[in-house]
Image (cartoon, rainbow, N blue to C red; front, top):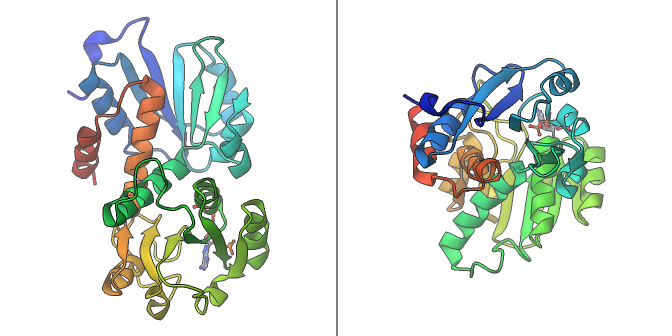
Length: 290
Ligand code: ATR
């Protein structure tokens, strides 16, 4: 009973998630349940796609109004947009595409960073009571480990919120390139172990180190974690990575990778429907499907 089948007709708004593979995606469950709960006449499908350009040109029907993009199509998707939001352009990848109702143009956005940054801000607000008009990341030293798609998203997000960004990556050149774009400092992951110019820094892991099945790996040794007040890990399998467990043992606030996905779903839902996201329902659906 997830779907609003009664409502399906010529004015139903069709959405989907474009990826390959796609069978594991929780998004169809999540958005169909959320659409139904607010009475929005839309459906959301899993779309196994090989070639994004071919797909988009074939299904350019105005009824297809919103797409989410997942691995490996976030970069290809960007090339199929009529217009791209400046942040998505800078990141070089989109996470959602929306057909503008006025002229049918396909607009590309990247809300991945809003999911992660939103979850970090919420956790920081909870601990220090910053007023809503100011980002609790402003002025903070924000260390991003990794310089791939997710690393870029976090680094741009931190920069936009006024944080002092540090990019630490296994391959120094990639850290340097990204850091230069966000006015930040670059170093290798090895150098990060001895980097602690101040206490209370914020750390975000976007490398794949510690992901299932290699759950005993960690991108930064425990000794280094005591200099951080908050640690976020973009990995969500397992939910509690070794990095997060050790950070917690060192007294840091931890933010799970699952929060990034949940917050991103809120943002995408609002972009797709123009309605406030049913936050508790989305959390419940995800909890049931994990
Ligand atoms: P995503 O889109 O999830 O960010 P990605 O673009 O493939 O994925 O980026 C993977 C990141 O994890 C990179 O920063 C990569 O470091 P390199 O630039 O040096 O390749 C990092 N990474 C992957 N495996 C790693 C490992 N074993 N040790 C350290 N860093 C690793």
